[in-house]
Length: 410
Image (cartoon, rainbow, N blue to C red):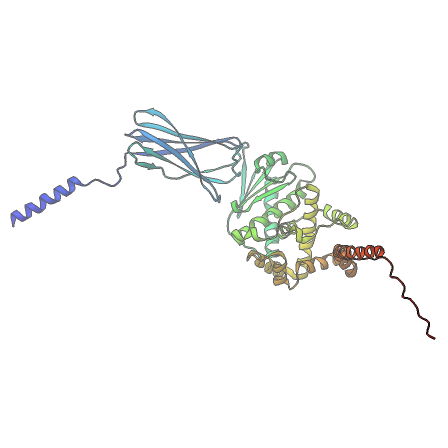
């Protein structure tokens, strides 16, 4: 019995002596930090402690809600025996990051033995740190501003709260996440914070997936008017995204910006003049052409905003909040512009546009139908004229028939 016990103990010792972990940790990566100059450069650093030489290292970072992760080689510099600094500097001029988004990043290092060390992830909120932001909170909003006193920020909060109730009444939308509102003192400062693809002439901007609104509210007599326009307008975009998620992008552009425009507490008075002028010159845009995007040039885009606002307001007056809710739901399901309107409201987009024009401009339906058919009538005429013309030319060139001889019957 004793002999058997000793043999078992000896076998266990031999097995433990030959055991090697599949992965031995020879170091660690800690002290992750990130610092940046807004719109210019972003530097990531970390400390690597290891008893082995380092073969290579990489930085992994991803912008909030971005579909891909950026991977770049990191620089390795010795700080002392077994201590290294890992670093990477990103060029934000050529690879911009959205303002007020959150970046998640981490480092990996490969040692000479082949072992890979991985850091825990860290995060950075990419604030526009060119300014010292003051903050005022009233749930679900936080207002950040750079110039002006607390009463100014409170007016912005009031516009947000009233706008929230208006947005909910228009389309039965839900609000579940906090919303940040950043107020710039002028449009130039805000524009620098926007992506290069942003609208140069816009007074407001929303990143709905970040629950973030940016507006420019310069001091002056129009400041309150702009506050009551810009904040509710952008708020509609954010709440639509909070309600629909990724399906937000399935909504037609005319509906997205039409809803945002009718949410404004102080509507743009220029829209009425713009619409009347465009109609008098037969220059209105077809609503169907505003499903995918608005025109690129500023004047046509402004007309697209005016038409979308007026058309959406007409739908709201005619079909109510439930009609808009149904329209949003059908488009969110992926239906195209014509089919979504027909399924939600029982009429095609073309029919709805005709009714809007009749109401807005007191337009005669027969005249409108003629104008809509005019291009097709011209095309039909061209198709018929060509063969008729060829026939006439052919007949004109054909030699006259010889007269038959006449016989006198006797």
